[in-house]
Amino acid sequence: MKETAAQSATAPEITGVNDPHSFSKPESAVMTHLFLELNVDFKEKKLTGTATIDFERRDSEDLILDTRDLNIFRVTDETGSKDLPYRLGNPVPFMGSALSISAPTGVKQVKVFYSTGPDAPALQWLDPSQTAGKKSPFLFTQSEAILARTWVPVQDSPGIRFTYDAVVHVPGGLMAVMSAENPKEKSADGIYSFHMPQRIPAYLLALAVGDFVFKAVDQRTGIYAEPVTIDKAVYEFAKMPEMVAAAEKLYGPYEWGQYDLIILPPSFPFGGMENPRITFCTPTILAGDRSLTTLVAHELAHSWSGNLVTNATWNDFWLNEGFTVYFENRIMELLYGKDFADMQRLLGQQDLKETVAELGDTSRDTQLKLDLKGRDPDDGMTDIAYEKGNSLLLVIENYTGRKAWDEFLRSYFQKHAFKTMDTEKFLEELKLQFFQDNKKAWDSLQIEKWVYQPGIPSNLPVIRSARFEYAEQQAKAWLQGTPASSLDVTRFSAFEWMHFLQQLPPTLKEEQLKELDETFHFTQSGNSEILFLWLQLCIRNNYHQSDPAIESFLIHVGRRKFVKPLFTELIKSPGGKAFAKRIYETARPNYHAITRQTIDELLNSNNN
Image (tube, rainbow, N blue to C red):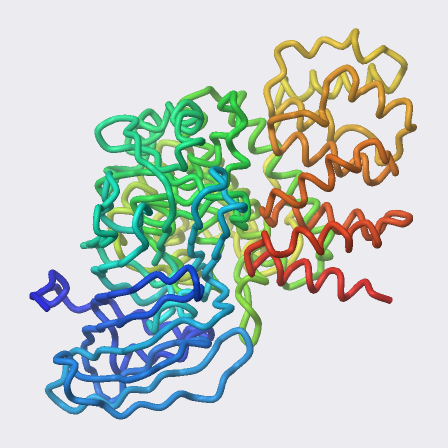
């Protein structure tokens, strides 16, 4: 293999922070570069090939990688001819097994011959019927939080960064993209080569294979999507170049070259995944009116908070997501004004309060700094990291003033680019910058309470929105007898409709729901966020006219944010458990493993 950029690069950062979710010991031997060569087999639903790993030896002959349910055939030196001893440790739930490779002095590169298991959680294999085009199969990966190890033997910790190259062989007529420099057209021979020159952590490894095409939005942004979806997607995200420009104006240059999106089939379990250079997106944001493009602003913001400066472990997840929600709001404020961004912030606060109520305000899972040792890090991926983290940053901004806060953040991203950050180090830098001689102010802002204690501190920022207040007035007028057809909602945005629905009481009469639906056509809404809130309301009130829409939504949408609450409401409703199980029997094959695990646990815990 030819010399890679990584082989002449400087030594990777070693944080000194112990990652409880990785077997690797980077202080002894740390990977610096990955070269993948993979064959994509849709018939057998597996990846087969090699992972060649460059590593820097510190004080051990053993290189330790994370694996989970991989079939390891051989491990050799870089030539592929000399076998190296290796051993697989006993499997640990959700973490998999340590792959310890004995590499004698002088060996700086190892090659692992392997294939993925039949149920690798990171891999979603879709039959043609499960795609938008209905003609070709589709594969996509989801590596966050610790699922990269289910398709690549790797040091699967956010605190370990490496560069990578790959060659991927796919069936004819299909295209492949990765979180790397990507092709713009299909390859006649089905062979695609990839290069990622910047160091990334394993959770940002990504691959998608299917019948999709590329269309540029401008010289550095574009869309990948199935042919039947591409034009709709290009229309929906026409403002991507403006978003990138707004983000750079706030916090410095975009460091990843190209910024593209790929629209995945509906089973994708999240709204988006911030894979470098190519965000993986759910089709549920294709509303037809550009009303849900805030998600793109969020994933773009991750190009700084998360991808550029990364949480050292999943216990520090809020450093990725809290910063990103704050940054997302700032992008939207630049593009659409403060009143728009304030609506978004208020919706976030509502989500935060609901999550704290659900988890309990004494639950340690409502702290920003988490303790996930012995637990699946997915347990920590709640609105706490996102919205409590964002609220803390708003508290700090209100104290420092926006100008000083922006200067701090711009410096923060530049200083720590392509490095990791933990909570304690961030608080230390924050204190040094703004509170070095003012402990009283530090204490008054309750910063350590925000980070290390459960619940919501008393100084939650107060945000007002005249547009939301007007939506509340319209909801109140309807509840007091004004016909729905007489309400003044002509200038409502999607956010105002969401807030309107959230102001309605949990108990409504059948005729009230019927009037709302006949007037505003919520059941036919193309906006998934509005439809989701409406269906929740229908389930709570046993409004069975919505049952076909509920069934269709749950079968065709695999986004966990929507699926879990709807199944939860169904289970609580009279006769709803049987309906939920019937839907899930059909829907389950369409869901990603992450969503399946969530709903399996939900239904099993409610069997009694």
